[in-house]
Amino acid sequence: MKLIMKFGGTSVQDADSVRRAVNIVYDRYSEHDLLAVVVSAKRGVTDRLITCAEAMINSKDAEEVADLVSFLTESHLTTLKEVAPDFYDETGEIIKRRIENLQDFLFAIYHLRELTVRSRDYIISFGERLNAPLISAALRQRGIPSMVLDGCEAGILTTENHGDAIALPSGEVRIKTRLEPVMKYSVPVITGFMGCSEKGVVTTLGRSGSDYSATIIGAAINADEIWIWTDVDGIMTTDPRMVPKARVIPRISYIEVMELSYFGAKVMHSRSIEPAMQKGIPVRVKNTFNPGFSGTLIEGGEQKDSRVVKAITYIDKVAAITITGAQMVGRPGVAQHIFSLLARHQINVMMISQGSSEANITLIIEAHQVRTAMDALMPLKERCVFRDISANEDVCAVAVVGSGMAGMAGTAGRTFSALGKAGINVMMITQGSSEVNISFVVRQEDGPKAVQVLHDEFNLTQMEV
Ligand code: ADP
Ligand code: ASP
Ligand code: MG
Image (tube, rainbow, N blue to C red):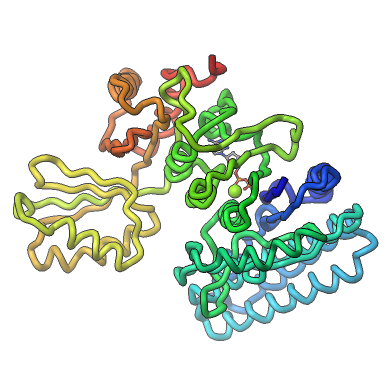
């Protein structure tokens, strides 16, 4: 079997978890599978890289760099010593050199007081670039031949939108020609989260992007399966941190996972399903801490079961922008003006609602883009395309997801009457034409309660029949 295995940050955060990951790879290696491993940064490292890079713009004396350097050195070298003592000197040197390179780069940002999107991407790719040599050494310590490739070396080509880059189809052949020969004699460890543009500049794929790296690679080499190893038993009926009684979903369709991840289920990167879906490659989500458990199988088809709703998801960092004005009524092209301005500023609109009177349009966007969106749209107000524009950041979006909803009357009724009974006011509702989700907006403080109420309403804690 040709298999891609991706290990998330929690699954490689210390010596114990690295040993667990190595055992998992070893089991498949001894079954003579052809394997490629994709790794994330150790848990928390990407956040620290971002914080330090951003601090450089206003830092007094760049002292944050010393803290980061000692944290990264201590964390990676300690784990390395435990999991790969025979390779400590050789791999330790690589890790130390990379940390020095990072340090020089951070000082350069400090002196220039400028952090461009390109430099930010380069800096945040270090989390994966420090971890991959460590994991590869741990595999070699266990007797598995292994080598390290960064995302560019593995052939991942992306668009130039730094921080949220998208894989280019032209990368497929490169990935295939670079990886397939290597997989015949070793288990390559590839840094997740990063690729490069056609000019060879490092790009990153968006937070949680290592999932996407794994599916881009899996699709390019026509893997039989892609396994995403994480710290929970699979994709669950909702975020288990919010509803402890959430249950694992044994099978789910590509479309359903796309809707879930798009609407905030952190378990997978929102674009990561697409490459697997295009090639029809099954994806399994499994728990490194419970490897014997079957996890969740994501594949094509409707995966319909007796249950109409499969999962509930929630995003809190969103904002609603409302545009009003009687002059919009019956006037063609208003929406086009609005969307083209937002697109020009790289603002993604997650939900839209427009009343039939057309006197107002509400858009849901990510909260950190509110200022940019308001500034981008203001010229339309000045040109009297609309009368007023306002933003509300005290909102969150909840989505009810399940392909069984298509063509079944009553899910919306049940959803909104359960919310009504719980005293939760719904501010906006949308339903995609695929009918795989119903999403709505409530006040931020009502979000967790809405998730809980709907999880109960649709009996999601009970096993499927
Ligand atoms: P990794 O580091 O392995 O990529 P993440 O932290 O990105 O892991 O994603 C796994 C986490 O996603 C879980 O620990 C869980 O708390 C959270 N999560 C949110 N929604 C869901 C869901 N519907 N199913 C499973 N996990 C979820
Ligand atoms: N390390 C990156 C992040 O924290 C990518 C990943 O973990 O998938 O977002
Ligand atoms: Mg993740």
